[in-house]
Image 1 (spheres, rainbow, N blue to C red):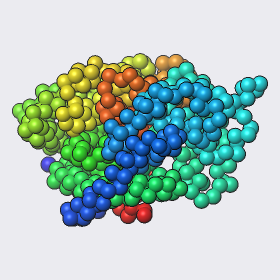
Image 2: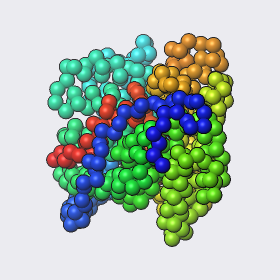
Image 3: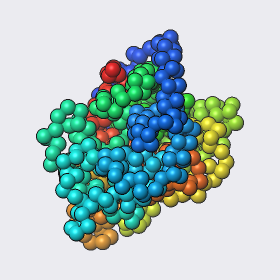
Length: 553
């Protein structure tokens, strides 16, 4: 049944419609037709340069600094997954033989790149390596490095990997950002693009697929240093673009077939943006099934979120929450006609997942995702009850529920669901213990969203409660102070995530990267404003880069 009423039939209630901006893409991505022969050509074109890059990584005659610079470029280009064993082997040897004396004569640029590479791969290089660049009398960074823009830029990027207690990296971040900001308008060529983008979002906190494409375009000197690396990156980007456009076509067609624009016309229509979200978590081709599945889950989360926040009455939400908790088709009978299609879409989609994964002996992963979705519905319902009762919860109560409504519990377990045999029972048990990295991720997801959207939420027909409101109410502070304190919590959560990715870790980086990449996507989307709700401000540019425009040669 098409929802057309602004008022609920059962009560005199003006629905709190948010009037979200419409999708700017329409059916654009449905027109794509995958040419498998072209896909094979690009796959073939990666083979020879891939072997040559592997040889370079393993080459014992290459200077350690040059080796680390090569590994840095491989990572920045999104190619690490092709050389995991080779890179880990080389880094293990280099780190084992590393001494502080090795860096006595090293430049700021080289030092920062090496620090970045080791930290990025879980090796805890001491931040003391940067002490040599500080003036002992003043305690400030030396004046003679201020003219080294490439070095300052690399320091700025490296400082993003700081953990708790590393004050020198906190100082480096402030120093480097101020220096780059002061000189950016005087720079030329690739360097100006490198600095401008890093000031918008550092590469470590960016979306890996986007960062890879921008590195290829803006770091031409580094990419051209090895011809085989340049050839591999170019063929790899073209291969991935074809595969990704096909996946985007599939999920766009699915959303169209599910008729979300008809059954939930009040909700945000953001399928390409949601697909980008899943691509940000894992770009590897072998996770194609996972990306498609999680994009579907993300679409369900979006329409459920908007149903709870921007459409349904409290009575309808109580019925819907009870039905989701029951998770059975017979529960549909208790729902009003305007909510039934949404509930059926949820059940049908998860039934399809169970059918797919039961053939692989992984149906239990679907059940875990289902449980987290039920928990999410309860969290959304709690927020709705607070709004209905005109109640502002305490900050602690808000955060306890907000860790659920951040949606990242559903997202992370669903991404694990799509990873295949690498996710065994031990991984699932660890995940269900709610480890520190997951808690930090949930906090990021909730607070980032709130701190950039609270003013918009206050303007809604039915005022939405955010962590900013709860903090102000609980601690009796002004808005600016509440925002500042929440931003400090965000940076502390980032340090928690960085810390949890350092060796020794319980599981491989392939598992931990799910949480790290979700944090990156959160930063990317909410750093300045809610660019998911208003994608034309930023995300549209990157969707065009990845799925519309050609790969730059």
